[in-house]
Amino acid sequence: MAFEPPRRLVKALGETAPSGDDWLEKLPEVAQQAVDLRELTVERVQVPGGRSSVVLLVRRADGTPAVLKLAPRRARPESERAALARWGGLGAVQLVEPFAAEGVLVLERLHPDVSVRSLPEAKALLEAAGTLRRLWVEPPGDHAFETVAERTGRQARVMRDSGGGSGGDEVASLVSAALEAREALLAAPPEVRLLHGTFRQSKVLAAERVPWLAVGPDPVVGECAFDLARLVRDRVEDLIATPSGASTTRRRVKRLAESLDVDQERLRGWTLFRAVESGVRALRVGRPRDAELLLEFAGWL
Image 1: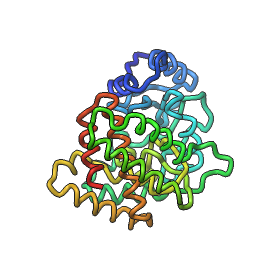
Image 2 (image 1 turned 90 degrees about the vertical axis):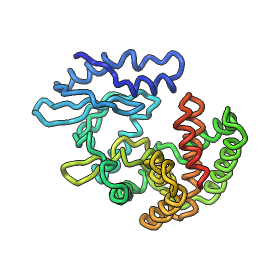
Image 3 (image 1 turned 135 degrees about the vertical axis):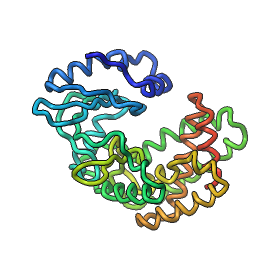
């Protein structure tokens, strides 16, 4: 099987892969083994694809369309598998094969080129929020999911060590505000739920059995405001480009909080933390334009 990983994946792994990691090098062999074992017919590799995995559009032996997703261990594919099993197809893509080799997921086929982002902004936010609400369920009692405190703790340590990096006093001030917000939010967390973890409009695809389903979770257990925070900054480049971007952002926080029964101040706080964390990370890996957008957005909060 001729196979070439998408450029976006290669670039992203080049920024984040630990020294000595050979997952990308072994990917063609792993893909071929997964295809042969299941007697799959590969139609194409989904491009541009994601930053932490590769998705192949395939057909099973009986002709049923499906998706073969391959991900390295650091992308936590087993955590994704556990979350998809817990949701059981409610609000999210369904597992076709519940048990598979580590890093191999076989999923129902959605419409990979049609995300909710294709809708007008107001409609897209409404549909995305409705999809997200269905994912917020109680985690299994014996779960091994990472918690919001654990994940943001790792991120906070990196932010604290960088101190804003090359961004100067303004970025350092945003980092300080984001870290303070995190501490306050974790001091009195509300009830916890299983969260998608990286939810945004591009993670909601058109489907057959229902209009929209979520894909690509990096699941975490914690409060719902953390999950909703990433959705607040969707289409950040459009927000930055408009004179009313700051006021539009504040209205979006209010509207999303009210529509999903989430505390508005907690949503604002987590939106600030997540935007600053992403901005500082973009600076660290050499994506200054992304960092500029994210940190300007964070300043509005």
